[in-house]
Length: 68
Length: 297
Image (cartoon, rainbow over all chains, first blue to last red; front, side):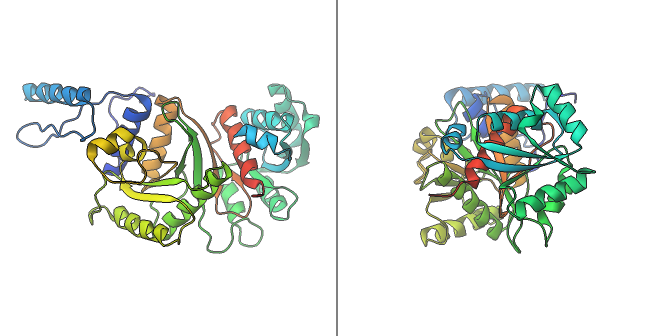
């Protein structure tokens, strides 16, 4: 990895959820999220996510869907 | 925090096991010079003096106590603290397993029978308006109910030392829903009832809540969740070590966070941190341990 990782796989949902929320809230990280594994991408963001995060999630879902 | 310790006007005696790495020596030299610590450096005398010269520290400011190896240095440091010759014990370059074995020794250690040992950190994050206390980053992998209650008590006790007499305690989950699928959330519900009945020290406790509900008033409004935490938590209790550890490391790495932590549950403060931790982090940990060693009056 050499400290240059692209993808972090978390051990469980509580860990992943805490990490992304901490980075969004305390480190001003931008987030886009999509559920994969269904026949179509699903946009499911937190109720309190920003407009930007929801918009970015739509973009991500579109990008993922195009690749399929 | 360091101001609070300095202004107490007391000097705390710190026994340091195998005190011969640059960051440990540097952090203690600063604490000694600022007047709130006396350092009892246990290890190889020549090596300690050489490390002092490397870091620009004056070895005559320390009391150096000879020990043959890591293990005997750990045993000696813990024993001096248990007998009252020191107020605080600190890990130097000794391995964590050897150090903790000495701390947990039944006859000469620092852990009362059946006591829960846990790790509490005070974190300063530029994006949050106040200090956050978090637990457990390092000791208990999957705490059960009793261990969670102990973790909450240690964090509350630490917050009180910082003058926060009724801290808000957020029991962190992935959402605010209590669910059988997340056994932690069942423990959290029980804890809230215990807090309500006074079975946990004075605090405002709620959970499960996610991190947004715990720390962000806007999220509380948007989600419409009725929580007394109101996005203004002092303490975050995490469901597992694996949740808490990436939280603090993520904030150190990406959020400009600074941290001080210590082991709780022992009869005296125990300073234990990664050997690779910076001099500044070790200095903060020493200051925190001194604050925790102070009497409540």
